[in-house]
Image (cartoon, rainbow, N blue to C red; front, side, top):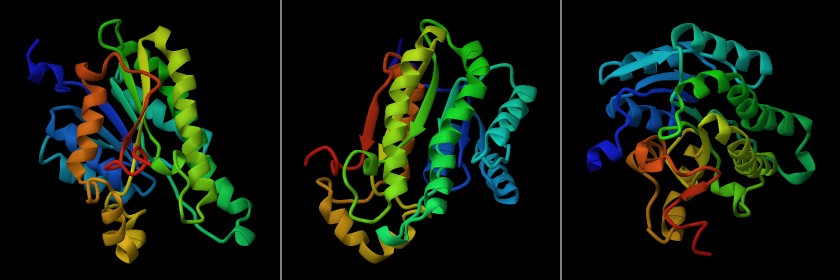
Amino acid sequence: MTVSDLFSIEGKTALVTGGSRGIGRMIAEGFVDAGATVYISSRKAEVCDEVAAELSSRGTCRSLPADLSTEAECRRLADALAEREGSLDVLVNNAGANWGAPLAEFDDAAWNRVLDLNVKGVFHLTKFLVPLLAAAGTHDDPARVINIGSIDGIQVPRLETYSYSASKAAVHHMTKVLALHLAPQHVTVNAIAPGPFESKMMAATLEAAGDAIARSAPLRRIGRPDDMAGAAIFLASRAGSYLTGTVIPVDGGIATTK
């Protein structure tokens, strides 16, 4: 096997949720450029369609919009994909929401909106896509589930994002639980825990304190799109086929050197 074969995902089929912007788009772009057939999903259909059309100029990208905060929508997305594909090599559970508010003002809405999408959505979509993942996976080349967590689920964030950090810690642990139970079906489950990257979710924070955040990272910079795409391609390729139940911080050392 050549090195290029080791890291190749050419010909694989992937679904990236939240794939129309931010980290999801970084991963979708990387997968498209690497020769995968990529489906992206997001809540806003017109945006999802526009991004899929744009990425199609570089490879194969298709739009399947869905609001993954409900079990019914997770089932509908899985069914829609099953109408188009007989198997799924890679599922990237990236769609997520954040919420920040002072402790005294943090109400049920702040928990429900975040947990419904960040935790329950990841679980339900994975559950409904197991048949397609199992159809793709083999003993030597398992199908892959890549959950997008956060370093806020590893370390204590300075911002008052109680439900977000709790949801990402839950995603990290659920990754390990799912890894155990899906391994017999030749499906691996791993998580990426991003640090600061330029995304809509991080825009206000980076505008206010981007330089300070970059200085706080041992590698002294904010994450780039190729950093995120590279980590996801590694997990989706032959090079990552013997990993399961791992949480990989991609954060310039912020959470791993303190």
